[in-house]
Image (cartoon, rainbow, N blue to C red; front, side, top):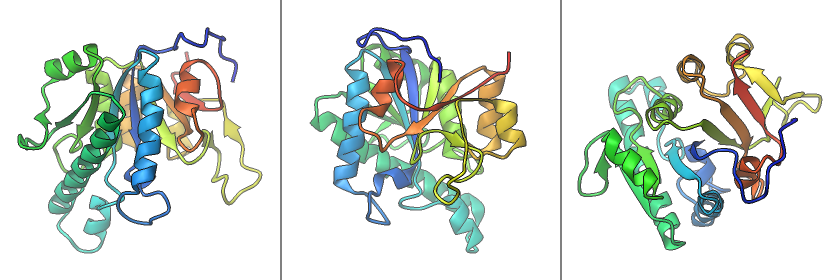
Length: 247
């Protein structure tokens, strides 16, 4: 990756959205939440927040319930998807607790109104929270079934005028095949949205990739398991893949 070096205290972006899967919060538990893992990710977010970057966050719900899995097992798809959305709210509240315990003011904003536990999604209010240096965690997807949290993340990133989506994964970028089972897998430094779709690289679902492409919103794929990796990329350091337009 040939990125221009920048001073250590001068991040490349002013406002970003971090997308992570619900499974990222499980640690080695296999299900649910692993408190130490949630705390570790919260510290990664704080390190970026401390650089003066405005941070949004979308967390999946697969560690608790995944709508597609429920549907595949015979559950009615709409009901299964709403259950998955509620799982994302639980994860968002857990992350809010971890962030606020280390001094980062946070708002959980849900696409499904549930006023006793979080705020409803109002775009201008969410933008104002970011301007006041609060981390915004967007929960409950888009509020509609048949849409993934990948699509919700891309939608919210565009609505918040984020400069990039950061996709935290278990590997340090996008590979032409699974690097865990293929030692000869090749990592891309840069790849276009169309290549991601044509080669079925499984970065995000097709709707999310198309929405990012149509709005020229870069997607930065990196390893969430590398300590300091999130903040490092914002300073132009580290290993990652950027999904971008080809011009």
